[in-house]
Image (cartoon, rainbow, N blue to C red; front, side, top):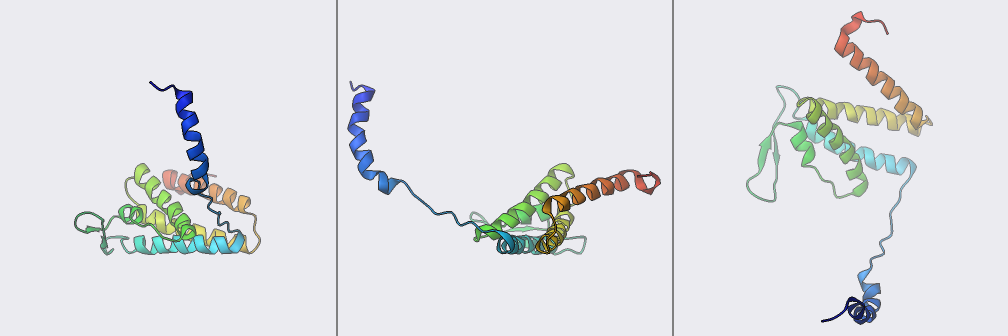
Length: 163
């Protein structure tokens, strides 16, 4: 029977010899500013374009390729959004942000994912445009949150309440 320290002593020389080959030192690709925003917005646009065609009663169906089985034919915005995975990681970040919007809308309301996706694209475009012109991102977020709360009050209570 081997004791644990004996086993570890036997493994140490091998692990030291293989350490350079086993550890991976990938460099992080970091982008800032307009370049990062532009790539993220491209991802948002790609996903929103794919989802937007399903909007409304006259919306078109989308065929989604699957790795197993036959292709899926759907007119559901959240299903289309979930199926999109972009190869460029910065574009994929933007697409994932909008996928989160569609998923949250689907969980909360059960419908309206396509509308939420189109609205998210519009908010992202306007926000990125204002930020690139020098606006404070924190103030944009605060303003967006104020607008959303006002909009929800109007939807829930109508125009009859005073704000």
